[in-house]
Image (cartoon, rainbow, N blue to C red; front, side):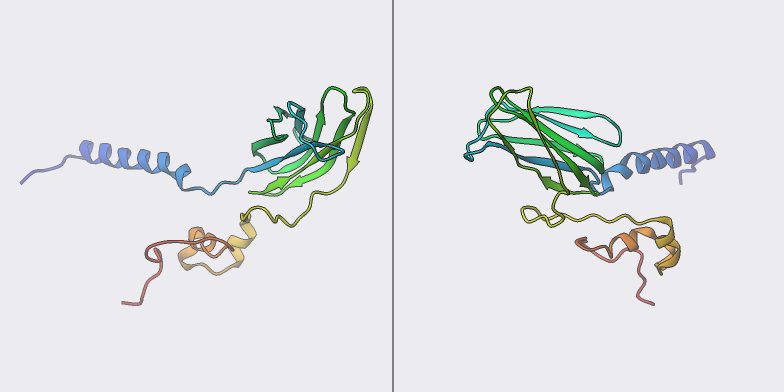
Length: 181
């Protein structure tokens, strides 16, 4: 019969704790958002290699992009918050779209139309982005401290509360629930 000393037990517990901490982010839901769209001219044709800037109004950080051959651009992995998007290309007026609010885990389509004119001219559009997202299926929910305190959960397990959020699907057994046996 093999005996295990305290040092070996501490090493094993430490290794398991380190493994649990390392795997915790892998179980998290995606919370970042995305802005994407197309840059078109007034006739509806794609503007190739237009320069697009997606700027966070909250942090003053920006992402610079260039449209592809179909006029498409994409700014992924954005932190939820307030944004503005601008686009410019040679021979067109610069366009700026303000008032874009990205909630958690959202894909917002922002199409921009450039008008023919000098690049020193600009067009500014201030409007809210549409709340109904018809081209993607995604959901997000923030569970704050108050919800954790007020809503009934088995053994105060916030994971069980998260499993009740709209759009969440789980596989396997209902971990944390007891069947009374």
